[in-house]
Image (spheres, rainbow, N blue to C red):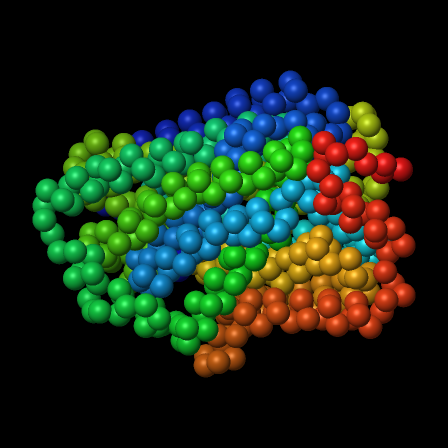
Amino acid sequence: MPAGLHVVDPGLSPVASVVAVLLVTTATLVVGAFGLRLSRTTSDFYVAGRAVTPGWNASAISGEYLSAASFLGVAGLVLTAGTDMLWFPVGYTAGYLVLLVLVAAPLRRSGAYTLPDFAEARLESARVRNAASLLVVGIGWLYLIPQLQGAGLALRAVTGAPRWVGGVVVAVVVLLNVVAGGMRSITFVQAFQYWLKLTAIAVPLFFVLLVWHSQGPPSPAAAAGGADWVRPLSGTGGREHPLYGTYSIVLALFFGTMGLPHVLVRFYTNPDGRGARRTTRTVIALLGAFYLFPPVYGALGRVYASDLVAGGQADTVVLLLPSRLVPGLGGQLLSALTTAGAFAAFLSTSSGLTMSIAGVLHQDLRRRRTGRARPDTLRGFRSATVVAISVPLALAVSSGSLSLADTVGLAFAVAASTFCPLLVLGIWWRRLSRTGALAGLVVGGGLASAAVLTTMAGLAGDGWGGSLLAQPAAWTVPLAFAVMVAVSLATPDSLPPNVSRTMVRLHTPEDVAVDRR
């Protein structure tokens, strides 16, 4: 969105939307306060006492996973670039299938609190843990930036407020929730917000489709201004080398999900590995239900809101489309409902990310673990939370932005190039060595991060070089796997001494008695 651009829709009154944002914010704080009453130990703060039921946990995971990219960005990409962008909702959902098959149950059995905990437990190396910690913070901040930018975009679109206001509102609410009750608080908040988001995106679309059907206008394909919008791999939207870009996006989304810190920490909250698998299956169903709706907004936007593309406001189509089709107060209320859903998306995802980053900052800086939530321990966690949300807020306010889904896609690319090979090889290949794991994290993380930073700075350029940097997963993910395997085979002397015992723990169901001394 160009700086200083006032994008309030002429037919949209800001009053209803402001009230909707206030109601969502208040409800979030009230629900989070309920979690405070149940948070009494360190385990409660980090992993909700490892006692979250699969159904409740699935709603919470879906709530935090459906971010600004899901609620606003997917529709904006479909509006701008056509049917190729349907790979985004497919990839976001299918990533959980990969997670279910390869990671969910063994990760829960590891007994770790965070990804760095898992890395240290599996490889028995402080250096690997430190590398994992840096990556958790980097990926989390990269993912938080578009959430805070999206909040600013949404609030500006419906009220004309300065771009920084939405990000500050989200940051303050998230900070209050996380420091109050930790994982207990945000579990209740995120489960509530999933169902709010589903309602907020589905109900207005029902009325939009009724109006569209009754008016009998051109189809979205006819309104696209050309056949390229509905033709796969056509390079619509100015994208070069669309075949490579599509495969790279698919790879990043399929394998990046298992490397997202705020997603993985949720599996530590299940009571056991069976619960983790049941949670993942339910998540796939909940995500599949939600992702039916954003592409329809993007397609109908070709008929009723194509001006948003030229104005650089494609990501606002979900917010503005209901008020354009449904006249009067009804349309304003429907757009207010989508605004409430968008803010729920920003709040829930930002809460999960902030929780995972703060947990890593606190544990790795203080490295004190206790069985009880002592005041000094929780004070350190709360200080880490302030840092976890303040840095991305400053970056979001001071920088420009790509489209929301594109920016989140870059975070997926870094996650897929680092934690995906670490988890897959660490869980399923006993010959992964400390040196091999560290080399893969450095190479995959370094190259993917360099590509992401170059793209975000607008320096990627054109041609094949620009495409490789804009969508790096297709070459950084295989390279990270190859480096980990090759270096591990070359350094058998750096195998963890207790690897056999660790592998038994990862793959033995909890109801089988195992001596883990």
